[in-house]
Length: 131
Image 1: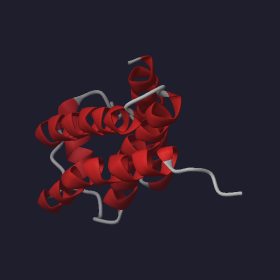
Image 2: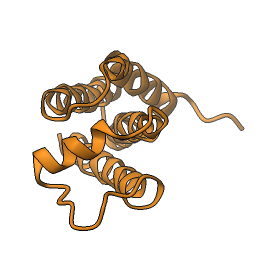
Image 3: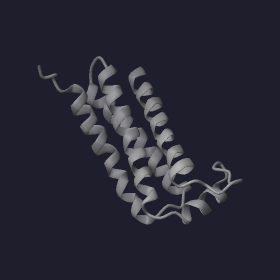
Image 4: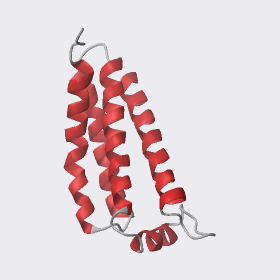
């Protein structure tokens, strides 16, 4: 289970790094806006173009993929189960974010992809290395 925890933590770090990149460099928040204030954050999100959410989707899926891959690589057994546990935790975080952030409705398309990329990561991590 340590591998799952490590995968979750590293996946979350990658997610936050990409989200910070998105909201500080690509689509910066207005000066004085507090990202931790839900009203201010949602007001900023409401004014973003749809292209801003491409990085958000990539960040979320990177969290699931990288975390699942790490968990599967670190695990001594049941590697695919470990990968899918990380993907499930990422999915639960995504569902919670959907309720907290007023993003576009079409963003829901990413939810099943959390498990798809975790499965792909698990398969890649457990595949035999080719010479």
